[in-house]
Image (cartoon, rainbow, N blue to C red; front, top):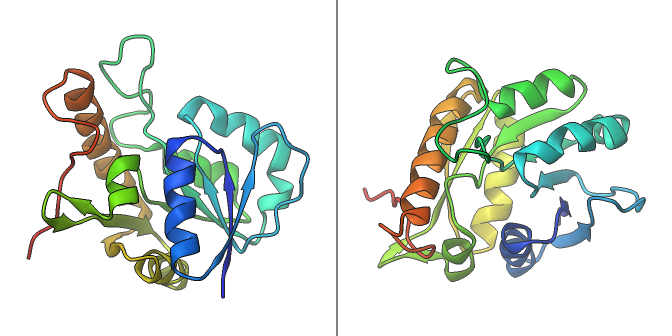
Length: 190
């Protein structure tokens, strides 16, 4: 059994926690401002992108040796018309640089909370795309996701996070423009 700590208790954190629990794993929710210790082997940062710097500053040492999952999409919240990371970079790569003693993965950012909770997108299974440089860490997260009833696909190295963030940005802008619902998304169909 794996313990997953989720920092953030909004819609995404709650949906991810539901998947973790459905798979028989242990989930602990930790508020962003909480002093509660992180006990999970996998730590999901279910917060908006601007909160990452604060978490690194306050909990960076505590995240050493852990699998840290970045679910953020680094949107320009002022304009909602672009990303705030360089075109050849990603929030996940910046997080990995800030947490050199952690194993950083990118996952869940291409999913909406409703599709994670429903475990489907239309008639297709919800799929979590996972990018990272450590195959064992990706496998550990994939096992938790699959145990909870959701598909997981290895999307490649952490450098692929920039494409995942672009997909997440596209989906968010489509939903904000009401071209798709918050219960929609991109599905992988074989």
